[in-house]
Length: 295
Image (cartoon, rainbow, N blue to C red; front, side):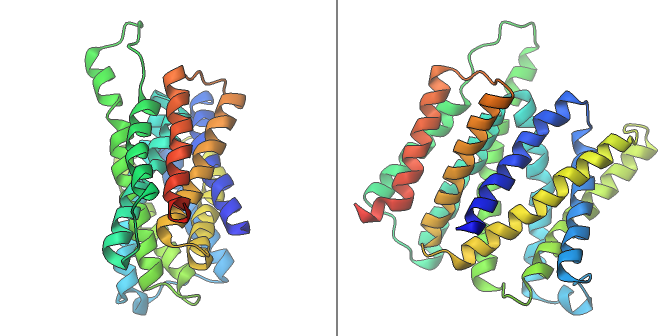
C-alpha cells in the first residue's frame, strides 16, 4: 500500500503545483521542460548510473518509452492549462477519470471482466466528468473564442491520460522487469525532455521565451516528485493484489479526492453544487469499477 499512497500524494502534488506556478508567474512550459531533465537526473541517481545504452534502443520497451515521453510532455502541458484556466479539481478529475480507457482495454487485451456494477461505474464516470467540468457562463468580458477552446481542455486531457495509463499498464505487464524498470522510466522522461528542450531552444532563439532562474527551480521542485510518482505507480501495478481494471481506478480515486480537497482548502477554489455532485459521483463510479465484482 506504500506505493499506492506515494502515487496518490505525489501525483496530486503535481496538479496542485501548477496553481503555485501561476501565483509566482512561472513559465509553465519552461518548468515542465526542466522537470523532465530533473526526472532523468533523479532516475539516473536512483539507478546508480545512466541506464540507457545502445542495446536499450533496440528493445521493444524503448519504443513504447518514446511514445510515453511524447504523451508525458503533451499531457503535462494540458494539465497545467486546465488547472490554471479552469480549476485544479477539473484537471484532476478529467485526468484521473480517464481510467475508463485502460479499464476497457484491460477487458480487450487481458480478458478481465467488466459487468454488473463495474459497467454501471463506467457509465457513472462519464456523467461525473461532464458534471465536474461544468462551468457556468462567465460574466467577465472575455472573448467567446477563449471560452470555447478552454472547455475542450478537460476532454483532451481525458483521452490523452487514458492512453498514457493504458501504455504504462501494457508495457508493465508485457515488457518491464525488475532489471529494466528504471531504464524504461528514464527513457520515457528522456524522450519528453528531448522534445521539450528542442522546442524551448527554438523559442529562446525566436525571443518568445526568456530564461529565468525561478523556472528552473520550479522544474526541479516538480521533477523529483514527478519521477517518483511514476515510479510508485509502476511498482503498485506490478505488486497490486487486484486486476489492473481495479488497481488503476483505486489509484485514481485517491488522487481525485485528495487533490480536490487540498485545492479547496489551500487555494480556496470555489466549486459549484454541480461540481461537487460530479466529484462525489466520480468517487461512487470509481468504487463501483474497483469493487463491483464483489457485489
